Image (cartoon, rainbow, N blue to C red; front, side, top):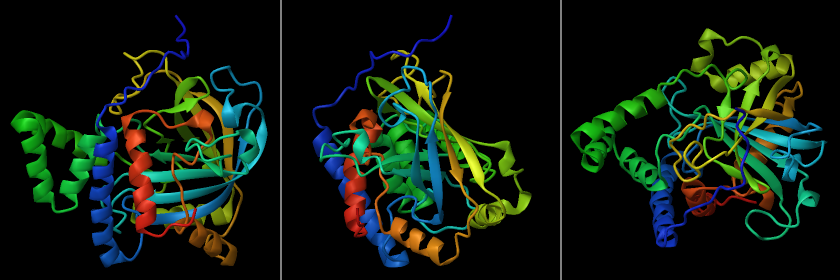
Amino acid sequence: MPIEPSTQWREVVAADEDQRYAEYARIFADIQARKNKRYGAGRALHRKGQGVARAELTVLPHLPAFAQQGLFAQAGRYHSVLRLSNGGMDRASDKTPDIRGLAISVRGVQALSAQSALGNGPPKQQDFLLINQEQFAFQTSDEFVHFVAAAAVSPGRMLGHFFKRYGPVGGAKQLAKLIKTMGKPFTGFANASLFSAVPMACGPYAVRVRLVPDAANGEPKPDARADWAGDFANRLRQQPLSWQLQLQPFVDEATTPIEDASVNWPTPYTTVATLKCPQQDMADAAGKALAEGVENGVIDPWQALAEHRPLGDVQRARKVVYFGSQQGRGAVG
């Protein structure tokens, strides 16, 4: 039988979240300050940028009801900016196992909604933060934050954290899961599918997001893992690059939970827009100016239409932690 998108999702907000999230922000601020001393001002996570590019998002017509909300309510074209990055706290070699991220910042959306997801007037932009993992590595924000805090000290501290928190058997399982996650093959920003991993609202519905590369972007190159930025920039100097942006709907709490970020939703994706980077030189004067503005600016899942408010514990924690990180690097937004 067909799986029907449902509006019966709900968030479960714990009574102590404000206090916990403030503590998470403090933990990340401390990590960020230590890394800033080593590398200069930068993000707490996804510190190593891999390039910034101009793009255009084209929303398609005749979408299904669950998708036809907010940014996707009607067909249209929007100037966008992409930021590519490694996910870690350090500026490590691209050969180091890591999460890879692609952020899409859609501009010119003020007229689409009276309020932003932050509730501070019309939205400035609609941001999508995607990684090369289809689900989050941890069930809750608490697990993730304390893992990062331990990993920021040393590999030994991280191992000790796993076994202290989860026990001998659980710690071994969690470590194996992390190794599998970090070691997932990545073929490049022009070739790999990327995912939101956690949900957002889509009007009265809830969805996750996927970005699928077009075959015209070309085949993966074996030597790209030595320089992900160079691989992407070289392709873009020679040709335009394009992707399909897709939404995946919530259907029920058992199958597509809102609060458990570690569950991979099994529901099908629907293409709602195309994303295209025109042929460009990311290293020319215009490209460098764009990159400087993006690196000094704000890209945040809460920079969104109210209709696309981020959902779930991990997303609610992001609201507080990202704001603290932005303050910690003097971001302009």
